[in-house]
Amino acid sequence: MQDLFSQEPVLERFLNYVTYDTQSKPGAKTSPSSAGQLALAKHLQQELVALGLQDIVLSQHGVLTAYLPANVDSNAPTIGFISHLDTSPDCSGKNVHPEVIENYRGGDIALGVGEEFLSPVHYPFLHQFIGKTLIVTDGNTLLGADNKAGIAEIMTALYRLKTENLPHGNIRVAFTPDEEIGLGMQFFPFEDFPCDWAYTIDGGTVGELEYENFNAASAKVTFYGRHIHPGSAKNKLINALTMACEFQHAFPQVETPENTAQREGFFHLNHFSGDIEKAELHYLIRDFDGTEFEKRKQFIRDLVAQFNQQKRLLKPIELVLTDSYKNMYETVKNVPQSIELADLAMKHCGITPNHKVIRGSTDGAWLAEKGLACPNLFTGGYNFHSKHELITLEGMKNAVNVIVAIMTLSRTWEKV
Image 1: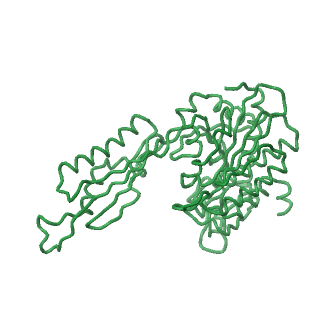
Image 2: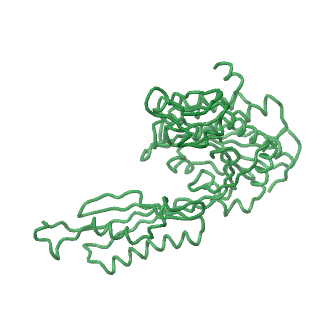
Image 3: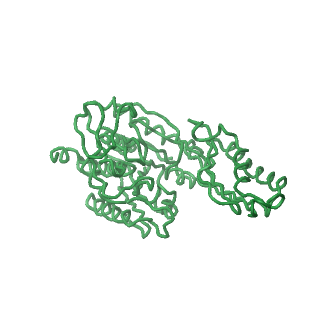
């Protein structure tokens, strides 16, 4: 096993990084939300120093940035590469014990000594991994490939540039906290990270290139009722729970996550709480199309207004509607070079680009809203946010090769 590590620096780095517990914590009062994220950032800071990067800054909020100037004379663009430090709060990331399976022969994969396992019956993509090297969990935690694989791939690409003395353009890198809870970019030093465009390394299967994501908002709808003994409740009791149920039934039942795919938008009731006197519904609102997105928000406004006008209420229904992020494509489409260079780099590495939409978001959506085009590139991972998470060594090496290709090919391109 040690021989494999020494031959594959991306694997060695990855197995080191997953030992850090960087699980983000919803509701935390600090940024980053967990101490492990800052600990990993400090470790990466020392690695960047050892690699000879410049302008290395680790902010008090756990954002780590660095710069590698071009080693050739050209008018090359400055390209950014970004991955996030945290792992998902959906599954424990403490005491991660990865298992490396060399020369996978097919069939079920036992995860540790418990009852968890991976099966090609449930995950048919395993069939394409015969003979490859898989990294899985022991069935007690997630693996952390989302997004420590991305970090390992960026760091290994920088290592190759330096040790192989490869010609390259201007490069900036950033490692950010709390992406999984949507808070990592609020302290991002945008003015100190000047790029012509950038890439997040946060995707899944080999070849993925993503540059469209949902427009997103959240809605909290609060209902107020009056509790009266049910034996004498006629014309007196106002049940917030039944009112909330009626409100939910007014939504189009086919426009939900479980009934939509690709670029189809949805309403998602993701939390329902309360009692007769007070009930709350929490919704996620998603749509790729900006006009349809605004219509979805207006649908909820109109429905609240209708209920307030037509129903017998103790007090008006309250609505808090909050925008979350926008579709990055509105910015990326103005910088087609960001897509063209990624496509060229993949083809240069013998990989067929697979353009996909993101039914979610990345840090790139926030950067795009600020004006920086930032498509998302693959890491080679699968089953993120779960105990069934896995990644292949070959996938990680492919990601490293593509990042190196972007870094080297960009020297021949012109600034935006």
